[in-house]
Amino acid sequence: MSSKANGTADGPNTLVVFDGNSATIQRFKIQEDDWKSVSNGFTSDMKSWTFTAATIGKALLVFMSNKMAFRFQRSKSGKSCWLRLPDTKFNHGERPPVAALKDNIYVVGSGGVGAHTKNVEKYSLTKNEWVAMEMITVPRRNHSLAVTDDAIYAIGGMNHRGVLATIEGYHISSKKWECVGSLDHPRHSAAAVTSGNDIFLLGGFIKGVRSNDFLHITMPSAACVRLPAMKITRTLFTAWIVDGKIYAVGGDNRQYDSVEVFDASKDKWELMDILATLRVDAAVCMLIP
Image (cartoon, rainbow, N blue to C red; front, side):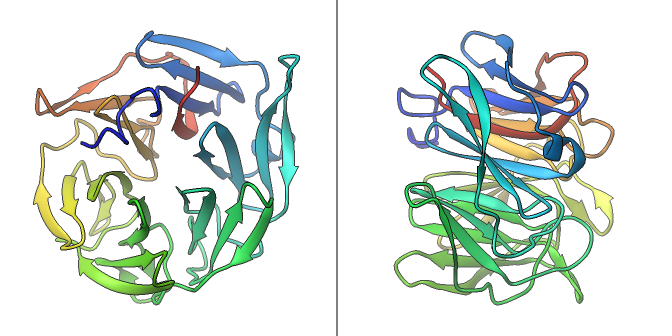
């Protein structure tokens, strides 16, 4: 895995978990093996609506199913609060599919139960504004998003025609979406992480059954290789790379309180000890000094 994805001086070193049981934010510093609670918890909107989270550098952002968006803001005095951002232009469903690329957050298609859309928009952290982007070619919901150095990939998902196997790519230079390959099986509600031009796809529903699959997809060829399966079947969860290891966090299969880790040197998954009361509503990975 590339150094960019690893927990180097410039890479992520902390899992940030939104705990639905306590409506607080918990952070786990990997190297210190230590959990700490962040002083500010959920907003009233976060308690009422489903959401996803993302990071741009040290900025932590939340995107709601009701089009609202927030940024976690810490003052010089040490106090923190949630800063309301402009609403998204489109409704992207219960868990908006988000991905960060350079200084922007992209929201592609939709998540949850309901409408599948082709809408794409991006949020600029420096300009604090949303801009509508080129639409994906196939309407999707509950797909996976993966980001390489200069491209975004929408993988699988579902629409009115059923579950999808196709992979669409959007290259920043060309400013257009195009089909770049297909999965071995149609699937939705999987998680994806990237290291360089390597995409790792985890879990998801296949033929209506939860999967513990672990796939390695090499771009731009979209060649797919199967890797050792996770210990737990997972859907609607998140995954992150920290210090060269892949973390699979949460899910909706009554194992939402678990985290497992893949260590390439051992070529296997291991369950991680976490807070006994944790319920993962969302999670991100970021650099925290």
